[in-house]
Image (cartoon, rainbow, N blue to C red; front, side):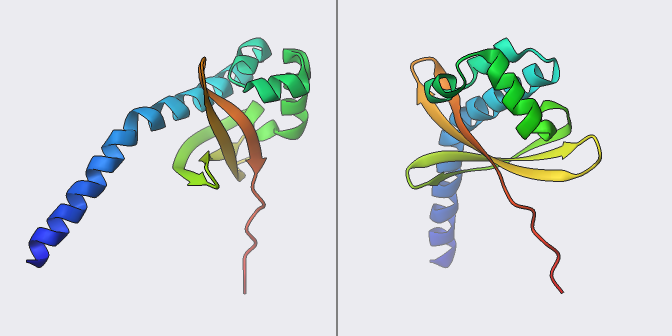
Length: 135
């Protein structure tokens, strides 16, 4: 009986995970495409992945690029990027991303994603505080 219950639970879990896979891949693709554009200093293309709200705040790709280079240098010139978990918090989708900068330091960022008529777009980015080493 336990085997049947465990089998049903696992089947449901993997079925749900696979159902979300196209969404997850699309979200990861948007973030990766923006980072690729940023690495090339193509702020016009990078700006296209921003939500209407972000576009309204910064107004131009040049302003957006200046904000990224000054506030998020690890994203502007990353050495490595790894997509971690996608989760829902208070009804919003957040993609966690681990970025290793060119100095070898690791940074965790959360990208808030929204679905628009133009597809998935980045609505916010939070640089998470570094976790200190405890004694």
